[in-house]
Image 1 (cartoon, rainbow, N blue to C red):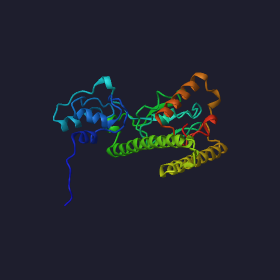
Image 2 (image 1 turned 45 degrees about the horizontal axis):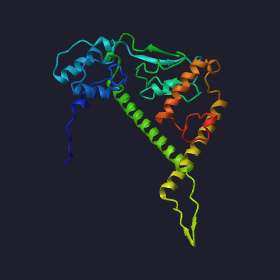
Image 3 (image 1 turned 180 degrees about the vertical axis):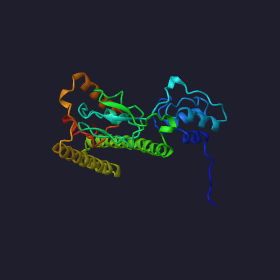
Image 4 (image 1 turned 30 degrees about the vertical axis):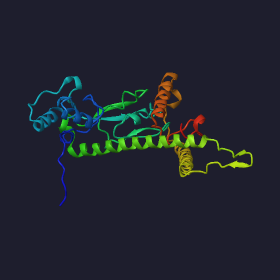
Length: 283
């Protein structure tokens, strides 16, 4: 006999949300919003992508009356699609970092593009773009809310967001491993100490030391692969067209964002290292 477990109220609420992960509800993603509704900390009319139909669905589940969408959270609208102007893109990666479903493809100093089938129209990539090269184009005509968004699309977006969070967790773990490897690599070996006729034995290499050395080797190999990949892409001309006209103010904004990523441990080993940090596994 297969054991079954009751679905929590938060999970039932989450199942009814459009999973655009747009944060317009005032929460960082659809799941935290669902948990807040279940806990009585948020109202069920704060999701503009769900629109009136979304409010009605939640009202039926919660046994509450249908109310108007809260205008403070936004308005119901046709679903937009993010489009990147390649003539203006500078390859700063800020839009990649903002996308909650990894719908943007690109790398540092490489051309970025949006995968239309994956974009949820959340708008989150627009504010961080320092050169305003991202436009939100309506793709559903007059259809709004759930009329402009299907359940299969919502389910797929939810899976991609979960994968996005898992990737960030892996990057943080990798950053911690690089830091540990760096600390282990900088430790100086202890020389044997002579005391009278006795020789004080030094500590032998531990399994942890060997593991850290292996991690350092893996990181160096990954960085070398990234360097070769960058050279190959450069030969194909896969580079932004506007990179030479970046102002000092915009470059300072990009540098600040990358510094925040490094502090948070979100810098990927496959990203482009600076010349000063090419030999630093923790950079």
